Image (tube, rainbow, N blue to C red; front, side, top):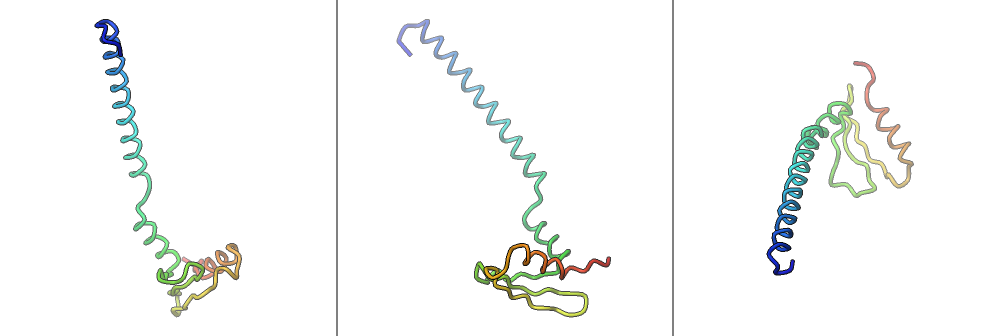
Amino acid sequence: CPAHPVVSLHCSTALRRELEELREESRRLEEDTEQEEDAVPSAAYVTQLYYKISRIDWDYEAEPAQIKGIHYGPDIAQPIDMDGSRHSRCFVSDYLWSLVPTAW
């Protein structure tokens, strides 16, 4: 801004207004983030829910293409060891869902 007092006052007012707008936008973003965090369940909750439904204890140490774990079915524990690169995602999904009992 130029050194002229009237122009300088105008620039100062414009900068204050811009700062207030940025503060308001920041406050809105924080509120939105808090609301999203409240609405999205935690990863631990989702993991526990999937375990309770599927009863599959995953082997997280397996290679990325390997699908490994243990399914704790109603009668016996059954190991799961599949090469995910040899099967379609649809096949893998159908197979895993077929392990889940439908009788409640």
